[in-house]
Length: 332
Image (cartoon, rainbow, N blue to C red; front, side, top):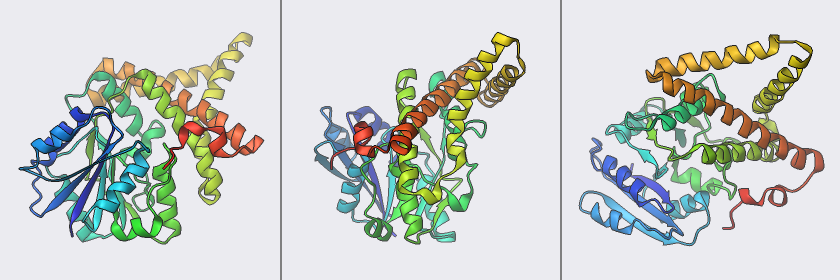
């Protein structure tokens, strides 16, 4: 089985250098190729790719900007392998990653898999706090932190594999972003392909992000969900509404203070204290614990507000998704 690693990049040559450095020291013994797709970058990574050609089998392509999903499809069409591994440019790859993927596929072959992400020691405190909220079972990020059922896992494209056959049958990623990952997973299920979580095949997802970027990201996640529910109503879940209900409940608990009803606000305070304690213990830092509380609030608020806005426009008013939120769709 030949692995082709598909890596879209947009103006991030520094990230590609770190990613290739990790791939150059993999303990995997068989051949694999790396396909880098420059998605309309003005700051290219061609020099970085050239510097690693003596150690890695690299194919480099440059194209007009059309978004990450279309760029991954472009790379898979160009790749020589029969199994594609999709990585984000802001990931650091442990030395045993490819060996772990190969072992899992030999033990229980599936046409699509996903792996979790973890925080690296060198990450900043904000990166570690955001990683906690994106992976913890206490937040909406539990699905990234190994809590989702192994057999019904929806991979995220920062750490995902798909067979050439499944790609060709499904057509790959759609042009929505974010939301292209669960959309592809659901379409693969409908086509009869099996998807599985490989728990031990993790990457360090660096997420070079600040609070403002994090809010925009989770807000877009919230906007995308009602669109996916419209496309795939049989996979709609009430849990997708929890962040919105969380924010509405918090607002109501603050209003109830005006009539001296404090109980509901105390529940929220206890929840945030629990987040603080768990994150502080896991990260061995009280500061990261505090930042995690702030990150969780941004996560719930950003996603919840985005979901409500999208639900109103898509499900209540009936606007077409491309008209309601053109910023979520790339032109191929």
